[in-house]
Image (tube, rainbow, N blue to C red):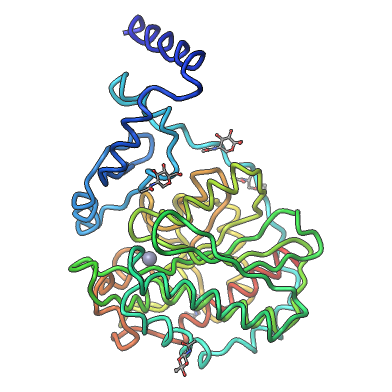
Length: 389
Ligand SMILES: *[C@@H]1O[C@H](CO)[C@@H](O)[C@H](O)[C@H]1NC(C)=O
Ligand SMILES: *[C@@H]1O[C@H](CO)[C@@H](O)[C@H](O)[C@H]1NC(C)=O
Ligand SMILES: *[C@@H]1O[C@H](CO)[C@@H](O)[C@H](O)[C@H]1NC(C)=O
Ligand SMILES: *[C@@H]1O[C@H](CO)[C@@H](O)[C@H](O)[C@H]1NC(C)=O
Ligand SMILES: *[C@@H]1O[C@H](CO)[C@@H](O)[C@H](O)[C@H]1NC(C)=O
Ligand SMILES: [Zn+2]
């Protein structure tokens, strides 16, 4: 065994010296991608495997979460792996130890919480769910990205004092992600990130109707309304605050992985990444809580978010059951060692909305609660100010 490993290292070293930097196996990686195969990682520390689009959809239908790492994986690493019979992906980097101060900006936060409006959120979600679907490869999925971009741009035009910027983050699929940014006094400082995914999916028929009201229209609208309230207040944080609407979360966290990898590769520091994914459903008969995910998140950031809920929300928080591998976009940031937290709509999985990924994910579903999701918009405003102002 050790012998064969030495030989591989030798062959690889020869290639590095003589092959103009092209790693062994790169052509076959590209060929597989060109054939439409995708590289799928289904568990931590387990080598990814090639799958057809159909096999990938089957995983989704079985509720099995994964990273589609085709666009972010280092092909050189896989080619070595294929020679050794499958090497594990790079171990996750150790997250920096991070600490957070107790909430102290009540004088600024509390007056703004009164400006958060359910009526606005209803209009915004009405617009977002009006797209036939927000599938990552559909024209309506792309149009929904432009609509979010233009909506934020309108906030920036209406309230110029905050210097709110918005841009599209393009991927190599149809849909784009959107980033809204309050640059603040030190635009190169560590970034405070709030995220949600703007795509939706109908797993019965990916070209079918997918309103995605709760998953994740709710989180998307939490962010839009928080941006509006902050912009209207002339928000000028000390360090940058960014709101991300990720494309293609439902098909293996494609958008957020592209962005998290870009931030890591360019050395961007992040104070904390807070993901909003499904914030509107309260299972009839269950206790209404904000449920903080315990896995693939940072304990100190999670405790900090808990203290924000204690300080600013009418709801109590609880620590949730584990969400599992690659369950939402925070996992993309966690993978690169960034601190994350995820406030979910209820305890998982029993009190989570099950009518998702279909034409049934609408605001008319019994249990869809505007007053519940409003609390997450308040949390978003508080988080932005307490971490960055
Ligand atoms: C998408 O981009 C990645 C990274 O640049 C590349 O490896 C992959 O081949 C591209 N996929 C397609 C379908 O173009
Ligand atoms: C959490 O904060 C404590 C100090 O309060 C620190 O010792 C610890 O390293 C932090 N943990 C992480 C994972 O950042
Ligand atoms: C949003 O929806 C409202 C109706 O609720 C409509 O009047 C408006 O034109 C829509 N805005 C956009 C940008 O689609
Ligand atoms: C993050 O960036 C660093 C510095 O460029 C790099 O060494 C490391 O491999 C990157 N991490 C991942 C998981 O790609
Ligand atoms: C929060 O928890 C306290 C103490 O357990 C309880 O009295 C209160 O009713 C809870 N509030 C809500 C909104 O559930
Ligand atoms: Zn979701």
